[in-house]
Length: 71
Image (tube, rainbow, N blue to C red; front, side, top):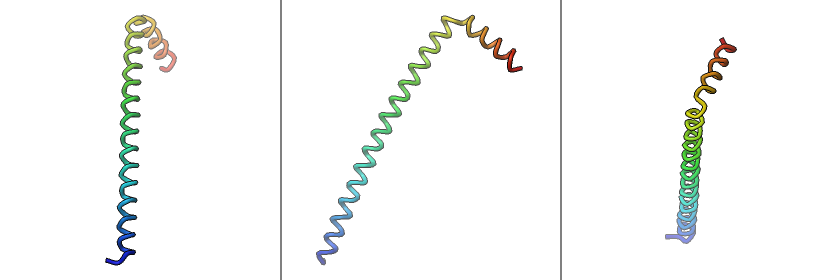
């Protein structure tokens, strides 16, 4: 096997390794981001349900006025 073929083979394997590690990093970062977003949305929903339970009348009035003005 000529030396330039060996060099090309080594270069390609290193390049593939770099691409693979970059992909792994990117997917793990995306997963972390998705988990963070999911947790954030859950927290917001919990807070919103709490607020809605506390201020049920306030929300219904707001909806009533909203429907009045948009109709």
